[in-house]
Image (spheres, helix red, strand yellow):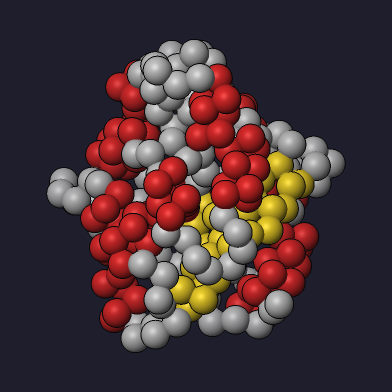
Length: 239
């Protein structure tokens, strides 16, 4: 945010039940989050803007595009989000890889995230869980400690949207509704990389940025390597 704000006017939305936003028992659906984004852009009178979504934020953008199209989007950025976290039992292995499916049990995945229940690789992708606590970048250590000081997330509140988030399949949106330039970010530490390659192959006006392990290419790449990320993002936006 600090680096981007040197050249751009940056707005960041904390979705309901996340960050500094209100904790509420209603609206725990990606479609409602997408409507929240629409209402925020209306409130700010943004006729045209660049939109970036990381992790579930990318799903919120796909929901926004599904509901409202791309007429108010100049360029879009998707950061390391599977196209469908839920892996359908009738999928081939290639379909699973293309979609990025990592679980056949949304309930167990949510229980692990919100209740600390045991997880294994058959329940969910464990790499983000393993990489998140590694303070292997001074930038990440700084931003993580800052966030932990100011933000007290309630896992149960966040959990209200997780089941809906997990079972959404966005392949039809990506195949048929994205007609603006797109940047996709992922890395060699991420098990989502195969699905990010599928998005890149599917969206005509897209660029794929793959960070190496030496470049901190995991699910938290923009926090761990913000200088490179901001440079790549600026290059894409300024084209």
